[in-house]
Length: 617
Image (cartoon, rainbow, N blue to C red; front, side, top):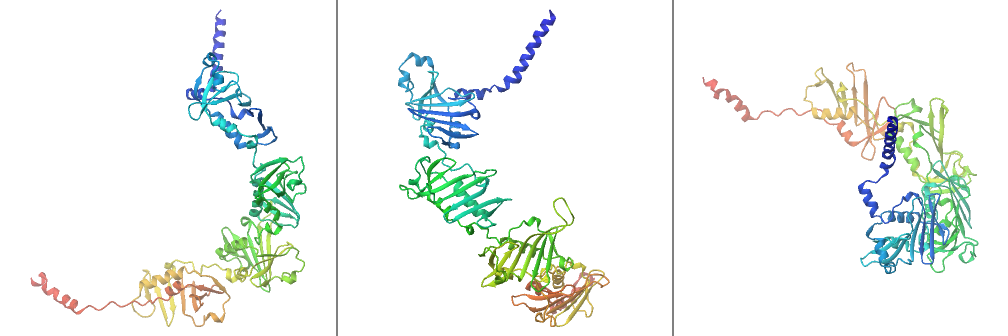
């Protein structure tokens, strides 16, 4: 018999284990159980797929289809998803304030009638897995804000808040979605706008909008987004009628225009037809949404979409490019050699001058300037007469390129143009321009040309000298005369000729400025007007103990804006020295001799040995 006992015990263990694993975890804890006991309704909101509201003879039915709520009765239309979701959340948290047992209600048969629960006018039913029975709404209780409710299959009655009654005691129209479409602006990939003036088609490609009809051009992402948002965010003002009847009274038999929005992989689109102005509400206009099948009114502002012309949504940026892949900038002025700049890490070099460092700040300024430059006028959409605008032989052409040093699966070795810009004739404050092979001729600010350096000398690095002050060993400064100093073995400076005191503060200031001298900007080639043959200052210095590494700075005439022309022997061209640096470079280096001792101090020094105790002894 022992084996039977063993089997029984094993069965008990298995049963207990299954209970612990499958039943116990799903049982609510004490706090949860108390909360559920206080709820009027207990259900899983995610499993509810329908709501039915009876209000007298009226019936409102809402169903969840493809995770969206739709009105099924008394009209078929989109339901307001947020309103329905909020109602379900309110039902979940709806609690009893008191309970009247069914026995007590049965003991007094008049109570159901007294509480308005025998033939309740307002009822609410939920459908779906685990849905509770329909709830009946009775009269308001003596307590403010409270009312009587019960389930249709039970006489047990609850005292609960009136809030749910207020949420469901609405007309069917109030449950309708007042948004025209579920599409959001970011999900729209194509737009077709038809008006009496013609048809315009817009399409999103690689995160940017393009105009496809009536011309091919870059679109303004922000303006097209705003155009789409006028539809996607529009709120229905009035529900007028279904669209199966006569549409002439609404101006929709032959609408003034249509705008159709397409989502990804949507070939049919969602069309909005715009009709006449409402007779009753002059600030509203009749519209028809083909997807919804109804006539509505929207604010009259929606009419603005019909006035949209291609130039209104064209991208007014001169050029659009990705700075992350930009590696080369080529400047080709007419009749002059071209300048090629290349990115090297975070810095830039001048390829056309054997790769010396370029003014990287100026390169970034040019990139930002080109990227942000706005077209002042769209001149022609067909570039059929380039000589008229000086674009057959442009005065300046800029090419922006990426560069790959070797072949990869994505790119080929060499320079790959991203965009090119040609600048033609000047017309007043504008200059004509053309982007690459685009057929358009546009105008941009004439001042833009003045802000672009076309001489390779102007692209040189602004750092003139990159030394430390202690690296300078010998120094010669020529102003009205010449002063020469040399650093000794103990790092003390002495004159090569003479024995005057040296102003150490001024000397150190000069060394600090000279060793790390920076130009304000490069002017270009050196010319006679820079007056380097009659310099204000000429400084020669060496940076090696054997004096072989020699450098020379010459400062010439004033620039006219409070600064000075400068040049160095090892670099070609003229640059600008700012006034504080100029003043530091010409500080007097001869110091003041120490003042002679005063007579009283001399007498005191003479008398002190006599008056000392040692002298008396």
